Length: 497
Image (cartoon, rainbow, N blue to C red):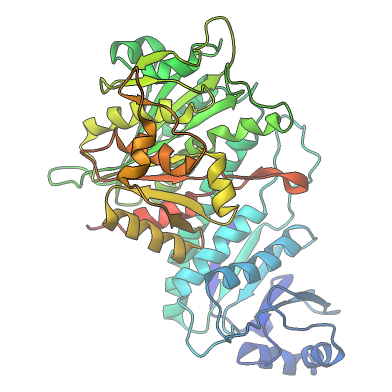
């Protein structure tokens, strides 16, 4: 999808659809359009056909004009202001309707939003581009999709001044790249596990680096990981015919002397998780293809940074495995030695994500990072605690946690911090190793974080549990692309630091 910005007269627009976010009280451009349409918008309000309620919509056809449609999207809130979730709800309502219809070229009108303050055009345009890009996504693999591609090819952002247009152009580029990164993460997550294997992910990482001087990819084999003594990671892939891969994607947007230390993103990629010998229940197990969505989000961020040529240094580390039961699989009660030298008693082979992440965290220390953030569909307990609205956040460095919390608020991709208290860490005690890989039924998300924290003691580290936010179930089943927006917001704030 193509994006542009303009301040040209609305009444001379060549777009086939105008998008007017407005409440019942018409202001600025809403009033102008109402006059040009002989009071048609006021008529829809008075008749009750358009309520102005947040997220509601009404499509008005305009015969005999170059612009064929006017889409009204409701913005009225109790406070009279649009916060980030409300703003995104308005944009999503417009995007879903236009990407599902016959419109090919749309124009978003920014001036009619409620509230007393002028919008930040870079931020608003970024949200428009991101949400329209993701709304246009259609899963397709080898013609297997039943979904027709969206006809909407371009969206223009209208603002009333040249300076606002200049700001909007920057926002559109950022939002479009972030949306494309989300769509890449969604596509990887949605692929079936017989296609999206660890080797497939490794190949995609190598393809991503082709033709991009700022991006290099390295893929470590099981033999190389064995030399590094990654006994914890390799214990997970021991039962699978699919060999494990450790994928390292280095994006270097700032080179030369004095370049900033990189941010390292570590993404869990269990391309299918049966639970291993601790076998999961059969119902819903098909959704365990999404257990690689943490790794997929790292792919999405790296792709977005490369598209934007952003002046930051970021390294993506993706441990990719398949967790299967077989005669060679790791058993409950086995003890393995991690790359750090710490030993782990594996009480449950379905708590495998932390076993691959711990070795990836140890490996990541070699890059002398400014911060390490791991992203993982780690615990069902996080879904019970936070549902699908917020990702869980745990960190050993409060300034890093605060920066991620703020980035989540600003991007609309929110997270919520949980504690890392010593009392929880004690639940990991083992009679036969330095630690167990589970801490019992209570506080499962927290004890998983405590486990990972043992491998990041010398680092500024944060963990994002995305088990509730990485994909949707039911009729809307599919990967969401989260937390790409949160991570992009965090990384963009690191420029120049």
